[in-house]
Length: 437
Image (tube, rainbow, N blue to C red; front, side):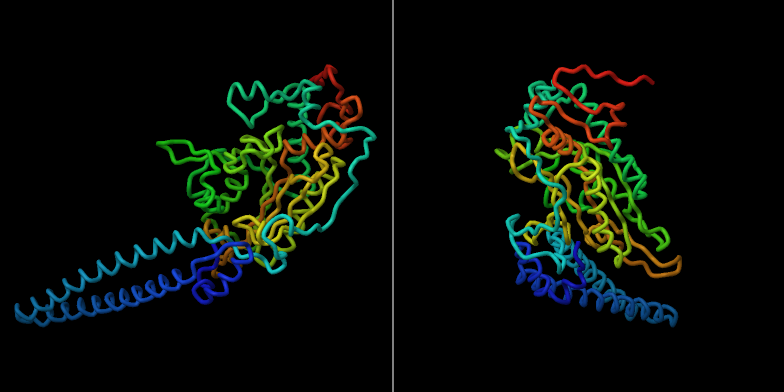
């Protein structure tokens, strides 16, 4: 949630910032509703003051043994004030609830360093690492490679569930597990992330806290109708909610958490896009990075977070680039986002494999996540950051496509070989023995 004090003080300025990201706030409606809220609040405070004064006078009359008529008049006036107070309070609560719902529809304000633009065409390339492989032959896509290895089965998944699912078998199932374990180990060992295991079902409050609700409910899978739980669309939701209703001491920050979770998305509005293969699925897995920082530390933490995610791609020897998203392409809750895009030879283009965002205090205000200097200090909002480190399925398919040979074999990066029992190559039809123990 954006700073409501700032919105009240400078609604036109906030509206102008939101226009940068293609969001047009109903400024006239908000200004009129906020004026009505202030009027009701002043009237409510005045009625409470009159009610308190009336109660005091009734007490004085009782103490001085006033006549029944005089006391009755005072009590009748007090009862009228009570009725007016109840009506004013109800009107104020109703309007406040309307405004609270409105606040939840407002996206985060874009950082001043975010470039102008409405779509991905205005995103800016920051850097790239390694060059796209030159095979000397027409590269196969991951679907064909997976079928040659007999480890990628879309038809069985379609029969048991439906489209946009896959069954991984044998060496590819093991490769996915190896990638996941490598990522978890790397972030914990190299960068001090604490590994956490979190629920895969969350409640409505958790999703509202991180900004998925109310805007993106159509993208979610709800468990119901009797239970208001949702399958997580990203590990960001449960991991970031570890900070909900918590006040950290300065000495406890930053917090760095890493988690491996499945993710479930309905992909509403994406029909016809990436129908083939593992690019866009209803169920996929990620290793998720979350940081909770002091406000002044979040810009530098954001740059480091991107480097942490990049380091996985470097260790796996995968060509990629870093893109700074323009205002119109930046996610709802984010103030600033970098995307990591890995090269896919079959498509001859870069595709997103990680999104690293600084939400500043947007999520913290929704989650009531704070920090303070010491036990006696006044608390303030923390800043939250999140990034994929990485999307496991997309990493797997990027490995297949970038490390293929003309015969359909796949070479395994040296860093990953220990997680596969020393296997350095996957060949079509080869039997893979698991190491003992």
